[in-house]
Length: 383
Length: 49
Image (cartoon, rainbow over all chains, first blue to last red; front, side, top):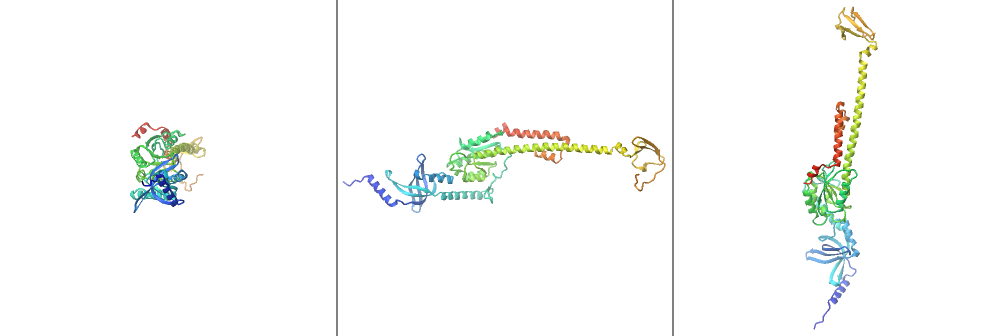
C-alpha cells in the first residue's frame, strides 16, 4: 500500500514553495487581458493575463482585490476606456496562491496609467493620420484642430429641425430635450430621435447605422449626445469609419459626448461641445441671437423711416422758401419791375422795337409807356 | 430685412413707396417671429421620412 498524501498537504506544500519563492517580490508586466469579470459589489476583478512570444502563448490567472481596485477606476477615468477584455495593460503584480482552488494568481497592485494613456494616444494619432491620408477633405490645421467638410459647413441662423443620435432613456436624451423643448423664449423645435447604445464594443457600428438613416435635407443639425453614466468608454467615438462618415456628413453635426479630459476623434470632425445640455443651450441661444438681430433691424428700420420723413419734411420746407423767394410778388416788393409788351414778359430787350408800348409793372401801379430810345447798358449799371 | 434697412438708410427709397416698405418689413418681422415659435406642420412631416 503506497503512502497516501492528502490534496491539502500538496496544496500546503505548493503554498509554502510559492510563498518562499515570491514573498515580497513584485513584477511589472505588460500583457493582454481577457475573461475580465468584475464583481462591482465587492470591488473584485478576475481576469486572465496572456502573452505570446517565440515560446508560444503564456496564460496566467489574474485578480484585483478591493484593496487595489481603485487602480482600475483610475485607469478607466484617465483613459476614458473601459477596463475590459482584449486590451493591453502594464501593471505591477505579486504572485499568490489560492489554496482552495490550487490556483496561482497574479494580483494586480497598480496599473501604469501613463503607459495606457500613451498607448491610447498612439492609436488615436494613427486613426487621425489615416483620416487625413485616406481622404482629400480632412486636413490638419496649424492650431492642431481639423478642417473637415462638416465642421466648415455654415450653421443655419435658426436651428429648429434636429436629428438626435443618442442612447435610449439616457440622461443625455433627457437633458437635451428638457433644455430645448422647455426653453424660456418659447421657440419651437422638432426633434427626431435616432437611438442606439453609445457605449461598448458595437457602439460605433450602431451609431454609424443610425447616422446613415438620417436624411440630411430634413434637418438643420444632427446632434450626437452621450451624457450621464460613467465618464469612461467613449472609444466608439474614436472609430475610423464613424469619424470619416461624420467628417463628410452634409448637415452640421454638433457633439455633446460628455467628457472633460479627452476630445474624441468624432468631436474633432464635427463641432464639439462638452455635454448634451451645452449643445441644447447653444441651439437655444443661437435662435435667441437671431431674434435679437431681427429686433435690431426692426429698430434700425423704423429709425431710418423717421429720419427719411424728417429729411423730406426739411427738403419740402426749403423748397417752399425758395419758391417764395423767387415769386414775382417778392421781387416787386424788393423794388424791381416786370416789363411786358403785348402781355408777354420781356426778358430780351432786342425784341423791343422803338415806339413799342410797354407796361412797367411795379408793386402798386402799372406804368404804361412808349419806347422812345434804347441805350446799351455797357457798364452793367443797375441804378 | 437687412436689404430693406440698407435701402432706406442709403436713401434709395422714394417717400411715396414708404408705406409699402413698412408693410413689407412688418410682414417679414411677423414671419420670423412666428417661424421661431411654430414649426410648420409640413416641415415636421417631411422630416419624419
